[in-house]
Length: 159
Image 1 (cartoon, helix red, strand yellow):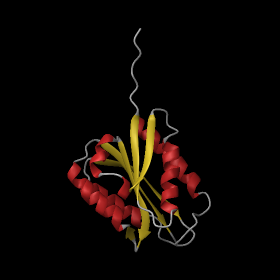
Image 2 (cartoon, helix red, strand yellow; image 1 turned 180 degrees about the vertical axis):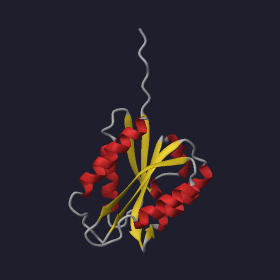
Image 3 (cartoon, helix red, strand yellow; image 1 turned 135 degrees about the vertical axis):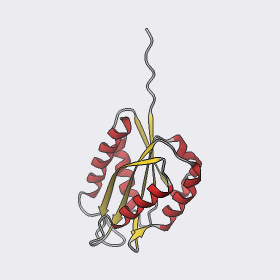
Image 4 (spheres, one colour; image 1 turned 45 degrees about the vertical axis):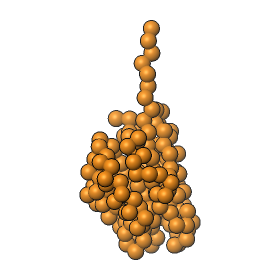
């Protein structure tokens, strides 16, 4: 009798972080995604991966801190470089970290940029995580919310 071979789905989280708060959220999302059986997620800072390597993943998530009411410039530059790769049939999500009353400000702009520059990605979620002050730490429960977000996203990858 032959066993059907299971193919592992792959996800990557590409992020930019200055004080480490966005990195913590990226790692928590990845932890949640990895709880989905049949999905393997990795986390890379923008300078740690070549845009061509994005083709190897079924899902791509992008995250950054809110800088002056918008996404971090290094992540926007990465997305611009990724535009020439012509990503197709991928799912994705966007997330940010913010302070004060800036919830969803940068992530909304990030989503717009992703949809404009990377039309092969279908966005399937967003997360905005609160940081207590510019340098951190993360507000209470933000990492656990990110894990839950990752769990839900991990199930979407399998569909």
